Length: 461
Figure 1 (tube, rainbow, N blue to C red):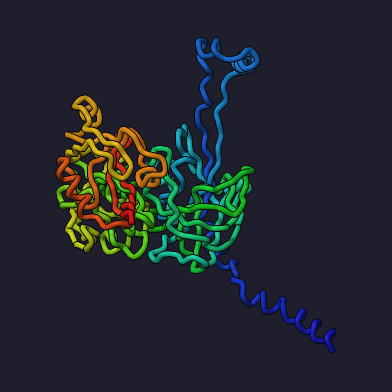
Figure 2: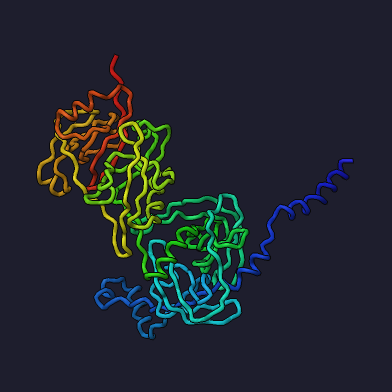
């Protein structure tokens, strides 16, 4: 009897599994003609100069001298892309065509076209190419967002293997992967789709056959896929492609603030029910944030109708807003939520965002929270670009200040919601605090603003 039941289950299992899986074949048949292989040639890396060779160890110097006897070859690279218009506009990654001397686009039917680089955007790692042809197959960039757990499909040329197809699911959304310059304008889609070198710039499809992302990065320890791949979401792709097609460069929304995450202690000190939002550590002078009335110590909870759950969410949202747009920002200030109108500024393609501002005065020579404070001299304030401040000379071990992470050399500029303009201000702010309360303290550390949460010690019995 038990044997018969087992046979029945084994017989039914393959049929039920097959019925639960999507059929990718129609998507591949329809989309593949619009997916392309990108062939790139660029200048070979330059040889070290004679002076640089002299500084190398002998065995490395012989290696370079030997290589120098042969003529330099063009360096070749491959990637993927897809056609977005019948007249020949092609999307790929910036890093695929960076430094290219020539770019060739190869179609599924083996036709090849020399491509012009219309424009690239290093911040989003996107590039727009143009080939001379008409009546090409095209792909639609999705309007709707993809959801975690959805099936997705990639077509590309991993390791030069043309038009390979892989599938998986969306593992997570809104992944923050800052660039080498520390910029963070892309809320990456994380998938477990097998993406390898050569897939870069290729499309990521949903089950409707629309492009929901552009494959850009992988996390790997071996050089190949280990199930962690990242794609640029459709909303960013649409925005960047439109601007590159129109002007050849990309302008982003800009607010002009320095921000940090809100941890559990800071959430408590600001009266939030849980850690969320982007805490403003500094507001730039003459920035859109300053014009809107945003202040250091505000926590941005919503921007343009979108919830800000962590500090990395804010540049994702602001960057997609057209400069000059007026939007609403919901901020937490002094224990209550306020709504401000913000006119978003613009960050041009070549600009580097920076924030500079002035800090309030602070003077104290007393040990507070286990730290010894001293008024900073004018020379130090000039170096930091501040008009005043209170220098932390010493922090007692296992004191509230030490537990909060405050160290000698920090400059204190604010306690709680109170700007500290004098010793009396600081003492008044301390007197308002309750034993056991967690309060935010604002510091300048190595020239950068920082908020920490410090807990008021319990009164001795």
